[in-house]
Amino acid sequence: MDTKKAFTEFKDEGIIIGRLLVAYADLEFSLFHCVNAIRDDFNTIFKAMFKARGETPRIDIADIFGRQSYHNIGLETQFERAVSSVRYCLKIRNRYAHCLWYDDLSGNLAFANFEEIAKVNSPLTISDLKTLTIHHINVPILSDQETYFEYTDNLLTWLNYEGRRLAGKSSIPRKLAPKQLKQPAPYMP
Image (tube, rainbow, N blue to C red; front, side):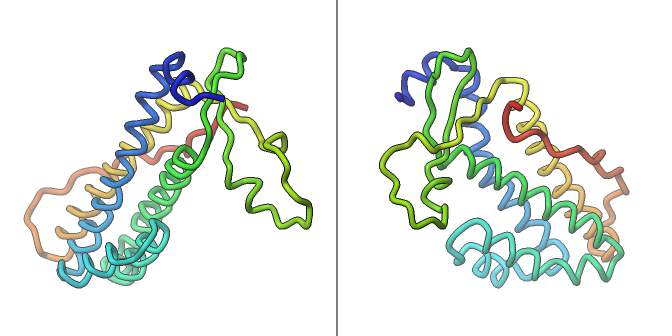
């Protein structure tokens, strides 16, 4: 198993995976802006979110700070959808950040998550990696995932501006929310 060799063979997949790994940070920052837009307390929200170690606690903090405020202006459903979308993007990001990549000669990029067998609550001793579940990924699925990241960022941006508009903090004309996208497949079936 050789990650470097795998990404030499599957360059297009590697490029998209790299963009997904890097783009996740932008989503967290867009979520911060979305919450700050309605709460208007940059210092408190910024420090609370980014002082927290780990992505899930940052999303949870943003949810706590933003939920009631968005509920008060009638955008609770859209806020919940945005937070849920960020959480799904985090799952995608974590799946790719915590795994081994390789070419298993199937014609598709293969990956296996180390955390999968380490988290198994079993008294059995792990003596090799044969129990890892092997998944495969291709450009169409990765492209769908990248489109979902873009949708999530657009939803957060729309919510930011619509929240400001409804709270009377901005006179920006109303725009339509991005069309809701279905969560993309996590890997090839």
